[in-house]
Length: 218
Picture 1 (tube, rainbow, N blue to C red):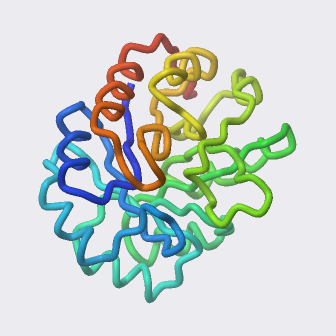
Picture 2: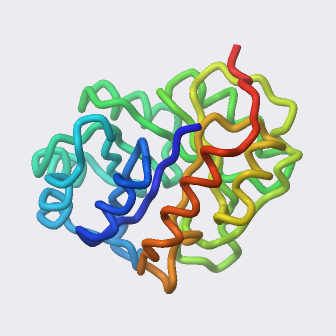
C-alpha cells in the first residue's frame, strides 16, 4: 500500500509524512484552499523530501502560465489536475510539460464511473475522490466520502489512488472494500483546515499500510 499525504505547508508536516513512510507528498497550488502554498514556499519544502518520495503539485484548471511558474520553481515529479480539465487538456499538459499526470475524478453516483475509462486513456494515474458538496469552493479536501461500493468491482488499466474523507479510522476498511493500491489524504489528518496533525499522519500511514487489499489492475 502506498500513501499520499496532500496539502502540506510546513517543514514539520513534510518531515512527519516522510518519517511515517508516505510515498507521495502533495503541495496545493489552489489559491482558495486553506492548504495553498506558493511556488517559492513549495520549493523550500521540497528540499526536505528525499528522492524516494515523489512530490506532487496539485492544480485546479491552471493555464500554461501558472503551470510554467510551478514547474520552473522546483523539479515537479507529478502534476495533479484537480479541476474540470478535459481529456484533451490532460493530454496537452502531458505533451507540453513532459511530466506524469494524475487526473482527479469526483464520484457521487454510478453515472460518474464512465469517466474512469475515458481518462484512463490519457492520464498516467487516476485519483478517485468524492464529489464536493454543492456550494463548496474546494474541489477536494472536504472530508466527504462516497459509496465505495460504486468502484468495488472495477478492473483498472492504470494505477489509481482512493481519496475522499479518508481517516486513520476508516482507511483500512476503504482499502479492503475497493482494493485500492494507493490512498490519498488531506483533511483526514488535520486538527483544523490546513493544519496537519503529526500524530494523525503517522496513524494514517500505519493503518493504510496494514490494510488488507487485493490488486485490481489488468
